[in-house]
Image (cartoon, rainbow, N blue to C red; front, top):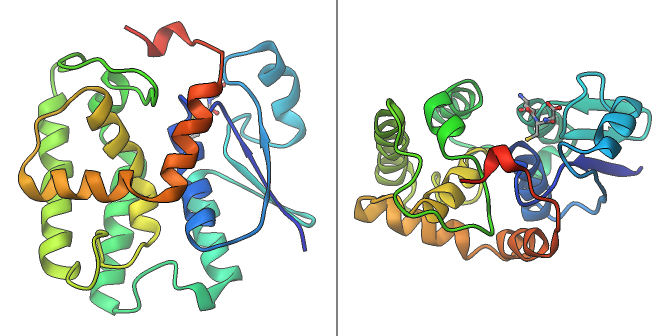
Length: 216
Ligand SMILES: N[C@@H](CCC(=O)N[C@@H](CS)C(=O)NCC(=O)O)C(=O)O
């Protein structure tokens, strides 16, 4: 059995970070193919792996799975003993709902505060609609932490797919120095303290490509 995750530049590719982080957190061994985003190399190589022409893509033996949430769901079914979602039915339903909400929403925040791990742009990106997205994200985080988070420092206590889906937002809040309530600040700190997140950021800092659309 071989697992390969095809991802984009670690500095910028928030969708790649999600399954990568989940796979690291659950201790899966996998190979990584990293293709710089927005490059000639990306255009020429991506279709050999990804039907959508986007990253991330998981290659599992002969199976190809693309799109961040589909990859996480696929892995949760392939490796069920690892508990990728909370075991509690209510928590799992909540986690699935907020993960889908993240996957399909928060466009204002995502467009105006693109992930850029190595940059610091305090106060930038606060365009129309961004604060409303931030408020909804932090409402979600507080509700999870208060209702389901008692046995750990992740959204549902232990790490789950929901944390993988929201981790790039924690990194954005650091880059843009977004003011947060105490519970959300603690959650950002908890995400930043994960060794896998530190590994990702370190790798992002060594990348040389610069995507001007994602810079101020
Ligand atoms: N809904 C997809 C979004 C994937 C996506 O937009 N990936 C970006 C990188 S973060 C990409 O591949 N962009 C390259 C392109 O569109 O040419 C997912 O959840 O995986």
